[in-house]
Every structure is written in structure tokens, then in C-alpha cells.
Length: 148
Image (cartoon, rainbow, N blue to C red; front, side):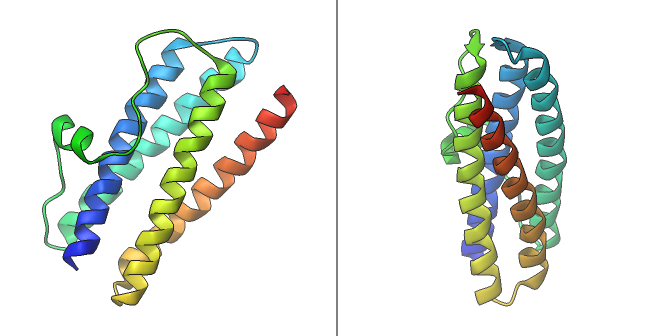
């Protein structure tokens, strides 16, 4: 189970950095799709905030300690932070799609690992993330297609 806890803490780190990135983009996005994406980014970071709490509480439920500092998150994430600067809407779309793909890969791996170790509560929790990220990716890709 230790390997699953490690992966859950890495996922928690990714979520925390992604949350900050989405909020940064929400504040700094520019371009013709500002109004639509500005609102959508807020929806995404609100959802990610809830997911952060779910994963941290799940780790606690498993009797382990979730990571809780930005220092820990930055050491364990593969999500690249957004810069403190204005960013064009097409760049935001590309980066958010890339990050959701990364998160989807992580939760698919966590589901597989959980099933192999008969941790069905963890596996079931991953189903929710898989559904959410798959839908977001589909919608973002559709938006990107209309921007070309």
C-alpha cells in the first residue's frame, strides 16, 4: 500500500500546482475567448479545490499523512507552474489540455494499482476523476478545434 500512498501524494501535489496554475491563467488570460475561458477556468479550479480535499482526506482515511506544503508539492509534481504574466487563450488551452492528460494518466495508473492491491475504495474514487478528466479533455479539444 505504500506505493499507492506515494502515488496519491504525488497526485495531490499535481492537483495543488494545477489549482494555482488554473487560477493564474484565470487572472492573466487574454485573447478573443477571454470571457468564455475566464469563467471556465474558475469552474476548473473550484473543482480541483474539492478534489484536493478528497485526496488528502482519502490518504488520512488510509491511515497515512498527506503532503501539505507548497515546498512538498513543488518537489513532487510534474505539472509546470504558470508564469506571472499575461497569456494568450490558445496557449492556455494547450497547457490545460496537456495537464488534464497528465492527470488522467495518473488516475488511470492509480486505479490499476488499487485494483491490483484490492484497494477498491481508492479504485472507486479514481473512477470519478477518470470521468471528470475525460469529459474536460473532450470539451477542451472541441473548443480548440473551433479556435483553429
